[in-house]
Length: 250
Length: 215
Ligand SMILES: Nc1ncnc2c1ncn2[C@@H]1O[C@H](COP(=O)(O)OP(=O)(O)O)[C@@H](O)[C@H]1O
Ligand SMILES: [Mg+2]
Image (cartoon, rainbow over all chains, first blue to last red; front, side, top):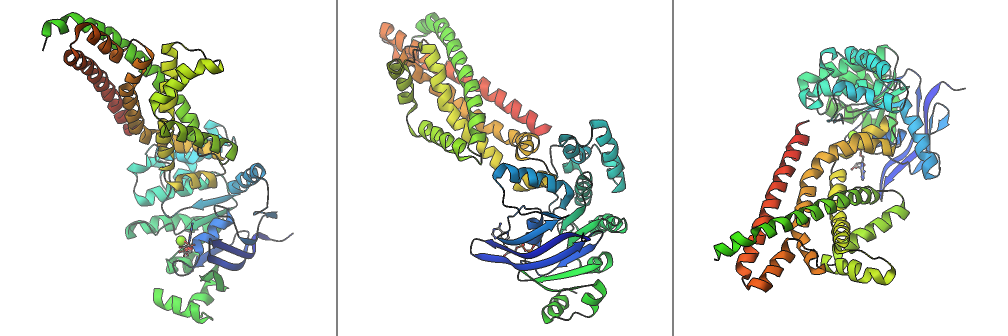
């Protein structure tokens, strides 16, 4: 039994003729905080989105908790398999994707109640606790349109956490925020890190990546160019692509 | 303009307007039901659902409503479908407008941001669950106006059922013209009633639209 929660083997993803992921190998251990960095267009989002199969892989294997994620199944069986898997894989998006017709607490409790993981009152109790945890106890009945970007993103994180996922995928979750709101969202991720939530964090905020992660993966042009502990990657990058990327950004 | 004549015949037009309203309301309800089913069906992943639905929509949008109505009313008996003018009117208009309404509903559904579906699916919700609780409530707000446009087109288009001898507004106008030889007055009178019905209906649509936009 491996301690890897996610194993990615030879993952390739094409969009038509465009090869976006060109053979990715990656392991993510339970409790590991992985920062995924790289230039815009290098394939970071695509990599996250193939892990939970928002995008189908073209080739290769993705293993999650001992299960092959990208199994070739008939439509119905595949849907069932993915629904089951996605409960375990939380995802937070750059543009929040909150449900605008639902209040904060309804956003958080929708999936657990619909999937009958919790009855209404239990879901409400734990939903409130989650919103409290992200600092929004006083905003539970607000609609997304009544929240700031930072608040929206924290509701989105709480909504994902409500499924008690085994891993959280964060795709540039602070990129759409005003600079003064970035901190409040980063703090929530930092707290999750301290609680040993397994996370893959795609970010352009390299200081935050260095601060929060225990493993950094640098992606360039659909390939993992270099990976290692943050201290090494940021202070002493080996590969010249990593060096020039860091020089541009820092 | 023969005001006296108008004063004499307008109650018949009012009665006929009731029939126009009845047939329109029933056809709109039928159209909405078909439109919902077809709108969702046209987005199905299953070809056996999608293709027949697409065919239905193309056929009823691509041929004249008048011919569809004749096909049903005059052609129906030949294949064992016997309908009176009212039934044929409701079904003919309803099935026709259903095709347009399905496009309005489909349009509203696909204009909900794709990120909404992704967020729902990422939580482990199935396709149908996402549709029901996330997409359709948002699409509902977007579909009120286009469905209102469809419904008003149907009210005006309901004039064609006069051709199968259903005694509604247009038929009544024609009937009085043949006895009075005053087409100007009779068509003005019919127009006033159509305009009245359409105005009331548009007002209702606007109210519903404001209501759904608010909550
Ligand atoms: N759905 C798609 N269809 C076609 N091309 C896509 C799609 N999604 C991403 N791409 C392309 O794949 C490449 C990598 O995109 P992405 O994974 O979003 O990069 P990153 O997140 O690192 O900025 C880009 O060239 C992008 O245009
Ligand atoms: Mg991206």
